[in-house]
Length: 357
Image: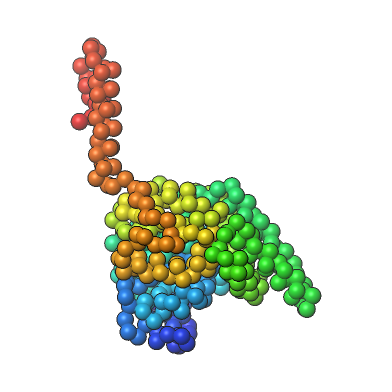
């Protein structure tokens, strides 16, 4: 499997190469972008799978803080951004296969994996499918199933996007489009408490500027992704991840994927830690960009996550595999004893076969 180079150049603010690759998965075209620092990477490549509206250039602030010392791979998966729609509709299996295809095409044997928001279910499945290829897993804004408020939020976003699509061209239309874009952004930031009101205003303005220039088909892909995969659906498989060091991170004030959801996700992963970022909502990487870059760098380099002023303390919520196995054994023994008692004195001697050793 190979990639086709679409565009290559240099990162203007770092000593790094910037390359956009075109890929194909099951007949559909999609893309990824790599930033490779000249001086080498501080850890395994960081593979970022963003939310359903994230594209190849959706992480400028993180780039500026990491591009000179960390190789980064940005994914624009099938059905997102400018990538081709998926015949028959999106599935998590299709998205997971496309993401694994990126690792093969770029000859990356092992990566650090960051899955954010609607990208978290794909990242989870990658670590479940091939744990040996994931050095570290960071899930930001992850949820096993969106709460009612989050589902309502996405439906509101869809309505706003449809109104954006109805805005006529011209000067008046441009003004309306800006207003609709601000309304769309405010849905996500409505219950966020950023570091300061000024920070929130800056984040909202920057996000609205990006939304207002998005073509209709990209916004349409965003709506289709959420409707097909996110709203009123289970997002994660029942199987637990084993053998992958994991950090589950959530904004303290996030109402889309609240901390309770993050804790539930962390409890499913054997070697995991949960942390909440103070004074942040769902857009942690935008609302607290300096702090997010810091905790990410610490995680990539196995530095301590304890005592960070901008985060709650690390919480280990998962039952270790050895304890889980012991608990399963105790349950089996209890069940065996109960079955033996229930069949004691029975005339049919074969009843002892009902118990398990």
